[in-house]
Image 1: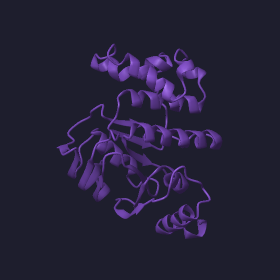
Image 2: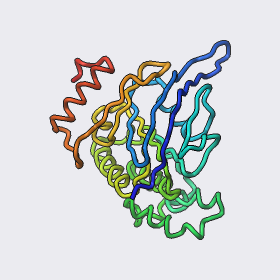
Image 3: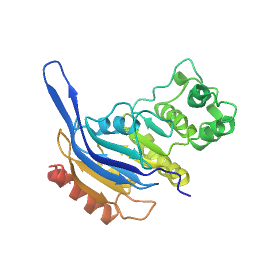
Image 4: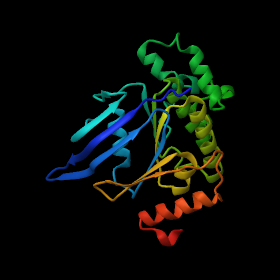
Length: 253
């Protein structure tokens, strides 16, 4: 069953007002994510990928254009649209369970969501660490705790802002598999920001390749390969070479 929402990004441009000038970040971005889609955003560092996630989350309005979820314009934040950041951002004075229950607690629905909280901790493999504190966790476990906190909200759109960027390679591989498994089970609509072409191809079903700032969509590439995926899949290798060429990194292929 697909639980995700339909996301429409219509002609979105955005700019930041600096002291004496305006810095354009996004220019005429447009795409549609159907319910349950997994889309990766790839592009040069600083091109505006994370800014786009902030707009989808409703943390700020776009300078121009519209963003809609299930036909309704995004005008602010909502627990159905959740971001998982590169850093775990856990409250150090709260246990893993205490961090996971922040959303329901803030909405006054803690009792009604008690089962969902325990289920989310189990889904990310932290049922045995519910009473642990952040300083007692490894980097990978801390990111699992952040993921559990996001899942408690039963998001319709889950945004992943380079959530694995600071993990060691083995933990990163394990977390990639876990994120895919959770997406296959929960079927939320997913937006992943990453600088790792291989990661984008392993996780997502579409890859949006963005240009330098102000970012425009240079290509919308469908990853039509069966799961589970292998890094040596000739189809993925060919897509990797195509994307690296689009990014001006053909020699890295």
